[in-house]
Image 1 (cartoon, rainbow, N blue to C red):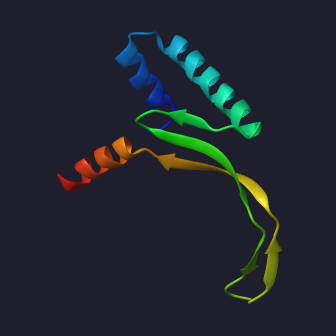
Image 2 (image 1 turned 135 degrees about the horizontal axis):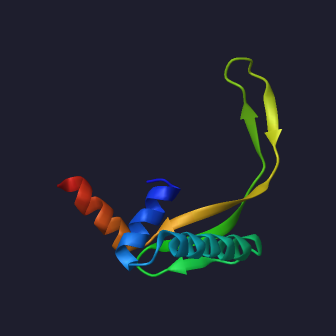
Length: 95
């Protein structure tokens, strides 16, 4: 599902216009981005948590040339799914 398909699905489910839905989605993403940039965790019950984690520096080896490169530490967004989401996903894959 891409951005436009998500807006269409949300619009159909909520009865809002596509313009209103797009505005709300953009505001939601903006708020989430700001919160994550401040290092805060965002949790959605029955869905999961988004959190910022520090990835330690590591050594990488280019497979063709065997040149070693040090990759510096950086912050990354991590998603941890809830048990409810995990169960729903597994239900769909079993049927």
